[in-house]
Amino acid sequence: MPSRSIESTLAADVIREPPAGSDVIFDVDVERGMLHFVLANIGSAPAHAVRVKLGETVRDLAGRRVNDNPLYSCLEFLAPGRRMRLLVDSLAGYGERRQPMKLTTKLQWTDDSGRSSTRTIVHDLRAWTQLRETL
Image (cartoon, rainbow, N blue to C red; front, side, top):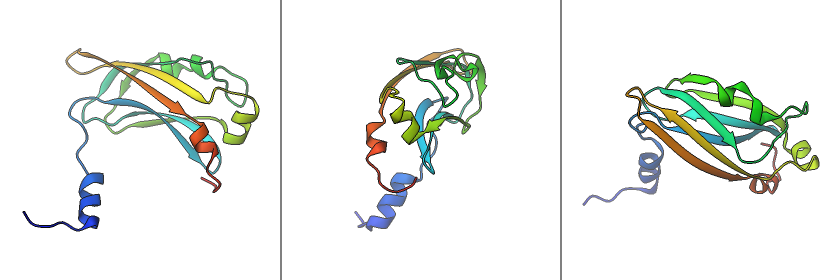
């Protein structure tokens, strides 16, 4: 077996084809100190009737319940490769207002054939608060 350099191994691990079918995730993104929730279809096919249920009540910087955002209850189509970012708050403000640091998110969607899929994702935002650099 030919040997591979670390660089080629890392590149092979990072660059890969999207999963077959629809594959919906909920992620957290911090950019320049601002906290965003990200709903994305990382798969190669559309996702339909996408529903997101946050296990904890989260409020945005205007005091509105993020849980009630139509993006999470009325999204009928999410194209492959599409990422929907929702600004929540500054990370510092989120913590100061004693928002939940551990989030459990339940996702549900169907694919083109009508097959239903579900996924539960847990994020612990305390990991982000430990970073000292501006993100």
